[in-house]
Amino acid sequence: MKKVVLAYSGGLDTSCAIKWLKDKGHDVIAYIADVGQGDDFSKIKTRALKTGASKVYVEDLKREFVENYICPTLKAGAIYEGKYLLATALSRPIIAKYQVQIAHKENATAIAHGCTGKGNDQVRFEVTARLLDPSLKIIAPVRVWEFKTRDEEIDYAKKKHIPIDVTKKSPYSIDKNIYGMSIECGILEDPWVEPPEEIYQMTHSPMKAPDKPTYIEIEFEKGAPKKINGKFFSPLALLAKLNEVGGKNGVGRADVIENRLVGIKSREIYEAPAGTILHIAHQELEALVLDRETLHYKQSIAQKYAEMVYYGLWETPLKKQLDCHIAKTQERVTGTIRLKLYKGNCIPVGRKSPFSLYREELATYGKKDVFDQKLAEGFIKIWGMPY
Image (cartoon, rainbow, N blue to C red; front, side, top):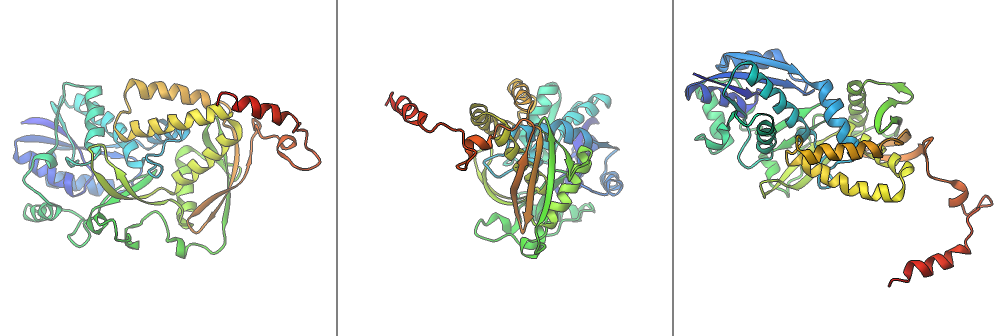
């Protein structure tokens, strides 16, 4: 039997994949990546073994995920199509990285995943794996097996006595990590239908959020968030705290029609309380400390960076070159942003930095004004001269 390392989540697709791969003659090694989804990993491990896995790895990747994947993307200001903070997309390259490492350790000839043929994750897993080790064979059961619908998968799981949590009444496909949650399938596939409140797990309904706003201050050092309300937090603890505070105030929901890499449009529901708060605060601080040309150019870099993350190009040369450029832009992104969280809104209400380029004596229309307005006439003439 040929060894195959399966990226296993314990969900419907990968649970069925273990049995399906085993019936095809493979020795299946299940690999579970802990990226902060908060699952009961002992239960998932037991499920994998009961379903037919010969061995199960559980890798705690949370710290590396936050420091080496989430934080660089925050510094880049990368948001796909202006709405998606890339929580799921960011987790795929680190999962694939360790999947390849386990395949080497086990002398496996192949790796496998539970992604569909019309999704983005298949690209992220496979491109990353091929960049790290092109000799590994990649098996994608969902692209080739006989099941055409999730209902057929559920019937297969029941027939083969595979333990699953999903039901036909609740057919949502959910991916969660410490940075956010992605929700799709079921009635969400109709873009006219309002998402039911039951699908949300990280955020309270804005309508039921507190009637009084919550004020928080986030302190950054060279683009990285370090403190909340003057108190230092580790990167993991900081995300957890902001998820709690933001979620309580209904901050971080997004209902998105997005363009998938494979060419189709999909309807996705996202939750990212901490990510939403951090991106808004980070953008506000950059507006205070970056010069105009750097700020405007960086916005184009942010879009490219977001596309590369979304397209599964994390390990490519250009993405690594962009990291170097972005790191240079963050040298003075140090300071504090005060935010007001209120019923789904995250509003910057204060900002300060030792590197602030804002000068009250130039901006004011009061008595402190030192701006020589007479110079404006000549400036305007020269500015418009080429036209």
